[in-house]
Length: 111
Image 1 (cartoon, rainbow, N blue to C red):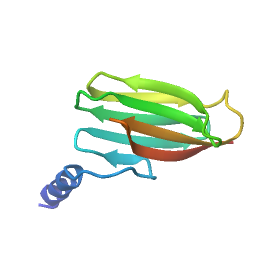
Image 2 (image 1 turned 135 degrees about the vertical axis):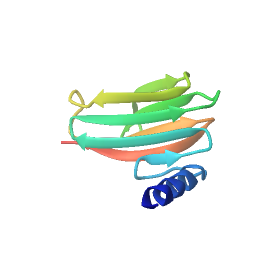
Image 3 (image 1 turned 180 degrees about the horizontal axis):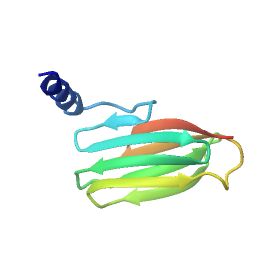
Image 4 (image 1 turned 60 degrees about the vertical axis):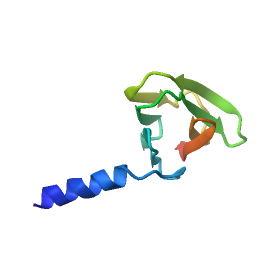
């Protein structure tokens, strides 16, 4: 019974549209994004896309300069790992955009 309640609550949560998130997890009606950093050497992005709209991944410096740009056209579940070891120490912004709107924005650091 606990399992049923858990999965029912999870399904309800995932079916709700959410605006841009600062914690790295975003669910929109067609796309789910999870950005996480387990260490200061890389950042991982999980993307589940089920729409015709492309998704753009950007990593920016604190000054707003784009350091990495990637466009994802293909539907389905995708996992990306970006190694930060060539970047200088500092904070960076990971932005995920779809249809001209930021659907996820997360600050990461490289120490």
